[in-house]
Length: 234
Image (cartoon, rainbow, N blue to C red):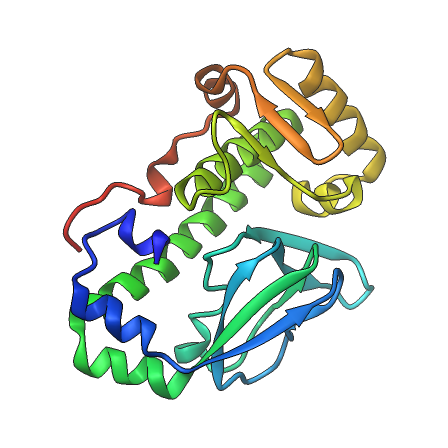
């Protein structure tokens, strides 16, 4: 509920509706599919712990990761209305997730219009992240893409208590980064070194520290407005 409370007041009655949902828990190993491309799910998945990514795999086997998901994210809430998934969601680390039946989500839409708008907001934020990724891939340099990704991940993790003091964990390999940035692994390795050389970021194994967030945001063209973390009536 932290994602919702950062964006609007969540009345007690609506919080109780969420707490009363019947949840099916599941664990996923690194590399395992959480949601399958082409599936017709009857429930939506809320990631509790771990890191996952939206994944589109081409016919030749090449993969593009189009967004990252962290604990607290609904990874496929849009499946309620789309019905058939046009992409997959893959675990990048060991993940814990819960699944909410679409039948119960539909009940919320019929009984709680404000809570429905908040859940709808989560899908519109997902779309905003996708639009930003499209712009990054087409109009930004590789260094800007990487800096922007780090800024976004820090802001999103900080909002749900997974980052503080401009430090956070990003447990991904350079192969995964390459799939996110649309680069080769060799090029990604060089860009990571270039970003470290600016002195704006320290990156040791999976630990990232941003030394000057405002400057990294300027260099990367990052503006957090698209994440809609302002708390206001929806």
